[in-house]
Image (cartoon, rainbow, N blue to C red; front, top):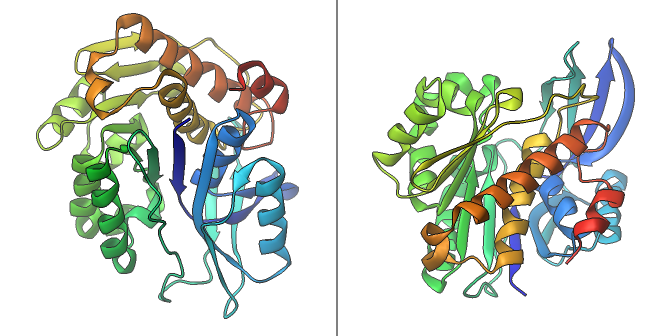
Length: 307
């Protein structure tokens, strides 16, 4: 079976509703994706860093309990593990405050040399545009792609990052150009390039990248451009929390690729039936996460689809 390598920050998410803390869970976009994949029976390795502290131990133990390989997590003792405060509004969308302890310090993350043809690399968020991390990340991505791994990129670009957009836009575009699949939301494209719909987003992307696009628009549906446009409607729900929904879409894409043996060379040959299955997993998995306070696919659902 192909292996999925996820790359991202590790944090402890603390949820607030009406200004009161209601829950705390291990988090970080690609940690969330890793846990869903582990629960689905996918061989998944998480590439990250943790502090040598109680929170770091909690996160590591949680990952291992969910069958996520932690052998590629690096450790630091000069600062504490990161925190993220998630304030839920009346629509259960989160406004984040991040407490990243290693800002300005050298990353401890190191990359494996075990990637092989058919593996999947899932990367994105702020770590993928962090200036001091770019060189080592790009070397790993380029080497992995040369080996035949399939790259999925999610910019996961947030409003608080908007002031730095002029500086990081070249990095975002470089990541998109390297990727085989870009998964991004309507909010991502609105912030990054002022594109208001899937068609304009794919047209902008297609100017510099050959990547397929999975474009999510919350209750307004999901689009897949491969390269033709395919639209899939989303059933109406009353969410408890939308935290982790996009991360679960990433997990669904990686799960579908591994499950169906999709590779770089066969990606553009996916049939309409294949794309419909991909959309089905993405929509079902993300909506299940919206109905709970967890950031990951529930075990009861994951067991139905476990490889």
